[in-house]
Image 1 (spheres, helix red, strand yellow):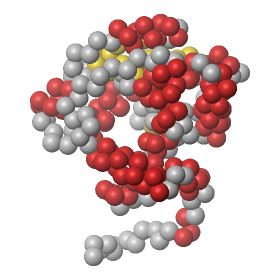
Image 2 (cartoon, one colour):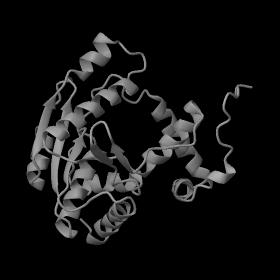
Image 3 (tube, rainbow, N blue to C red):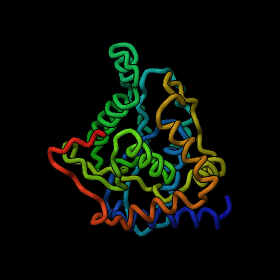
Length: 249
């Protein structure tokens, strides 16, 4: 791997960690592994940070098995290569979402169930932080989803304290564009498992992602402008809530 590119990428990851106070000495970090490239790259880069940063923290790779029969051997081998414990956690989430509940729009329920299962396993392992692989494009996509479907100006926070779980959720890749993640995945030989979910690539998020891609053809710096806006939001020039008002026109 080109050392200059890896150094550049790690610089962005470390900047996010410093800006949002993501890691401290003694942390035990559970990394949610989905089998996709984003979470695999997250684990790889956190491993690199652990090797080079003046911080002592532990990593655990957790794969939540939704019951679709995936072969997780490549993930096990990947974690072994990095010297990270791999935890394969069986769940009945797939059965609950697609058979018991038969959700027409399953993504929200599935995400909530996966989040709860991941947090529970993290606590069981004695972890105080959970790391997720959301990157820069996910930040922007979520912003536009919130605007289009919920009428809200918001996206997820890079660092969030989950009071019910007594855990911190961190997203160290929030400054990394998707193309960097793709390149690191190839260079680091990150295993990517085929997504067996019946709802894969047929979601509102996928629609918004395609729209943002189209917008970037005319506005190449759209992602960077969104991050700048999030860092310098002028709340005084937003209208705020009007209690009791009917906002339907």
